[in-house]
Image 1 (spheres, rainbow, N blue to C red):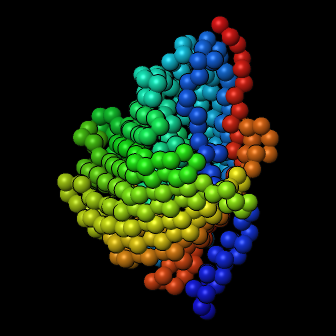
Image 2 (cartoon, helix red, strand yellow):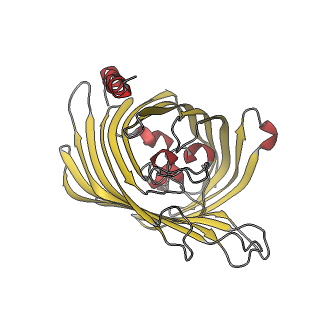
Image 3 (tube, rainbow, N blue to C red):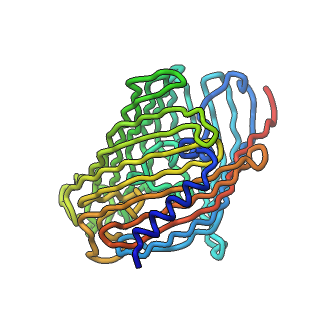
Length: 376
């Protein structure tokens, strides 16, 4: 069967469905980190909830197929003692349907201080996952569903020309003689606008770095060796509004992506690797459609989407040193009620060297609602 022909026809079919198109609508899934002076001396109850089903139909040797079906619930109290400080306390509950007796629960505390009109400092529960604005080969979208909570320290700079997000996400703490390792991620996601003409175009340089570390000096299991993996993506992004009925905006991005094993004793299948990632995205108020191309050579990214890697995380010594993918993504978002958003995502990957098509789809209901409780 000629998969290439059917893949091209499928992409054309998706394009014909688009009635309009905008940047990937991850904005529906982002947390608002701004502190508003109008909220000073007010107490709120915020409810964040994600109900999801995500089905990964992967047929190649690299990534495994599976289905996630469950919810993440995050209720928390938020208090603004001043126009520069935000305090929050609550919890997160993650559950998969069919395994309701294994609910993952965690306590959340956060302190946020606006150091400067453009700079925020966060300690405790930080603004994580999609808020970092990393590309999928570095940071898997699926973590928004199954690892949505990040705790650590964060600095966010946001001005007319510069966005920077510097953070430490501490995934696993260890104490003396624990039989497991500490795990943390350090990231810097930034974008610098070098040319800008309002309502006409924007040219920017995205610069993304991520370090994943597993190790520690006080754990008792000496058989687990220290691992430090570095990933980087640097490129150009050109955005232009389009005053058309079907297309409101297009976005062209091209990245050079790198991987490097910084561990003292290197035990990864490859010591380093490089990749290129190029996408064209068309968007409007409800839909966005993306086509792209990925070329990866000896590429590893521990918390990126595994479909882009050149070795299998689950099968011993299975590798594809060079991986070439043609990518098609279709996303639909709709406000079904105030604070309630419906999202449908479909992503397909044509493996050029393996001549097979892999795909994933997801349906999500995202609820972000904030209730005023009391003024002081």
